[in-house]
Length: 299
Ligand SMILES: NC(=O)c1ccc[n+]([C@@H]2O[C@H](COP(=O)([O-])OP(=O)(O)OC[C@H]3O[C@@H](n4cnc5c(N)ncnc54)[C@H](OP(=O)(O)O)[C@@H]3O)[C@@H](O)[C@H]2O)c1
Image (cartoon, rainbow, N blue to C red; front, side):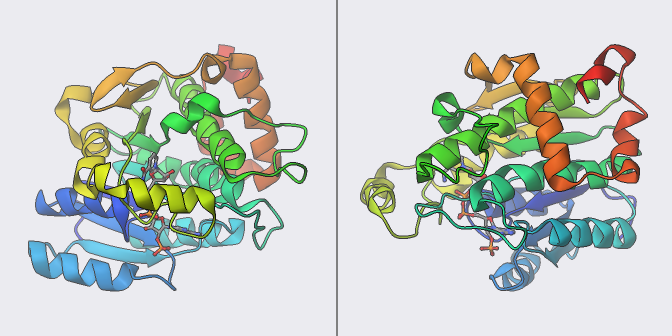
């Protein structure tokens, strides 16, 4: 892959909103690295897209992002194999009706939907900082509005429900976005979050009441192509060049919950997340080097 091409790294790119996003970017001739699990259809999807679009610069990078060691391995492989990164789209996420734990022993929703966004972003930041116009796009959800961060029990070992876990993780996405945008304010990197709409994807396709309700309502949802529109807008549109620290719905700035704007809570979440992922000195260094003086206390 040539380093002269703008390069996008999209997680959860094998289906749904991520795939809708890659399809548009591929059609525009961008270079795209697509992360999804090796056990899923990612490699085949990348091959089909290369054929459909005639764009040879689409690569599948298999990784299970619910596992911290897999996030680290995938980031190292990306940094080694690809010469540049212009846009990171943190999108891989899911809803789990029943509580599950990851290889690291973390609650699955928190690990996949939040810890992976946080860790992957840190690990590719150095490369992003070399781009002339870098962007980070975090796919969140309107579910942030009913989310609460349970810092005393983020893994919800007591009183788990799928929506409680999902709301927490999506609120965490928005809080992470706002804080990271402030930490990167003196760099060209922009950071925004979005709600893609209610989209007919593989989302919530498991068992349980919530999944059955989602299935019944599916005909009224957006298509994955429609669900990808705000992601593509934030990732590639010149209209949002330089715009940072915002939350978007339907390609327009929107308000997120009052809780998401609580800076002290953002700081607490940041520190807890750093500890949970075991963020090392070297991993934290690219960000620490560019953080404005007045924001250092929040790290
Ligand atoms: N659909 C909606 O209505 C809706 C609404 C608001 C927000 N969102 C958000 O949109 C994002 C995308 O969801 P979607 O609706 O497009 O869901 P989806 O169709 O189920 O796609 C999820 C993607 O994530 C990947 N993925 C799942 N587990 C993974 C893991 N452990 N490691 C790596 N990749 C993994 C899947 O690939 P493999 O299975 O191949 O690994 C797939 O590519 C999520 O963050 C979700 O919270 C969706």
